[in-house]
View 1 (tube, rainbow over the protein chains, first blue to last red):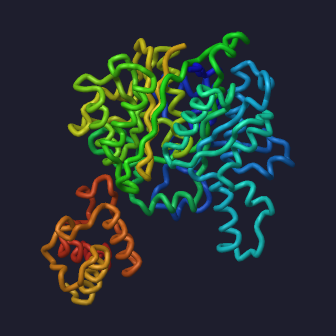
View 2: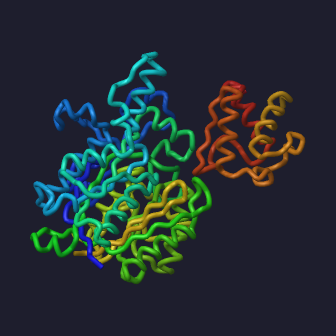
Length: 400
Length: 91
């Protein structure tokens, strides 16, 4: 079977607008969570988040194109540009029909929906922006990436809530491995930090009003973020032949469904996903040196995920961290942003910490790298994503 | 305990638990009613909409809030306190 490697990575998130800044923030244990700045925030009961601040799209995009770009598309385009530059590619190498794109997102153009509903419902207007549909559609970011980079092979978006990015990257990996494509842009993008988007989340009563404390005793829920991360995936021999720098190899991927509950996670479903990804990679649990957890900071996820990790890895699991207290829960983009922490572990030997950790929770018996980064030799890393809807997706990477 | 408030809350709880209101007794717990976490969140939403109050409740720490959901009777008393407002709580 063909091998698949990552040759480029790019990101926009609350920590930084690029990869080096994001990795530095993770290593330094900085958090991007703060007071939200958005219209009608005073009518929200949850007023914190990991927001990309000072974003000025007019400075980044041509005005005629910008009217077609929702914020989630803007994030994706900037992240993809950085990833392609890092891969040393001004254009896709070889036949563009053999290159494609899979992007995860849960809300798609959620900000565009919010703006259009505000116009017709709150402001009493009878028309919305003419490009409302092409801006809001879930596949908008994936489609704009194909146009920006001339990707003429398989391209689509994946919507599996908080697992969208891992599903997207996993599918792109499988396509290259199977010979359907030679290269793919893959990742995720999300921007739901607007009044309507947050109102919907408030209703579920799982959001923390004060902070994100994954795996910690006394944790009070999730804190939402926004952003994107995009990776250049290539077939290994072709990447080597063109002299690309290989950031990591994607070794295994598995996806499972709990078939249980629409919001409550399952130990069994998460366990099967982690075991499946290891089996796909042909890697034993003992070889894994770091797990980037889903670790949302909700009571239910963290307890369930800890139990699943102990089931798979036994009494001495590898260090596990959740970086969501740094970049927030980026929902459909979160797996992609979190894969950056796996690159940090594999390439730089730095385990990004679990910020906001206050005290050990007996229900989460894990080494969560609390609050301060740690150095470690890591040759294999795992990234977990367990979504609402009971849809699980786990990636296993190794050092190049 | 104002009977109208209690009756309305029992009606809301009965609807969420798929029971007849007559089957819901004040000493019953959410578990006895068969209400899961989603049912609880929907019940709280219905209470907020019915009484025009805002219920302080975070599903991550259901026992840490001022809103006692340990039994039907506790929920009724908690809603009555919310309806009466902070002044009543002091008095």
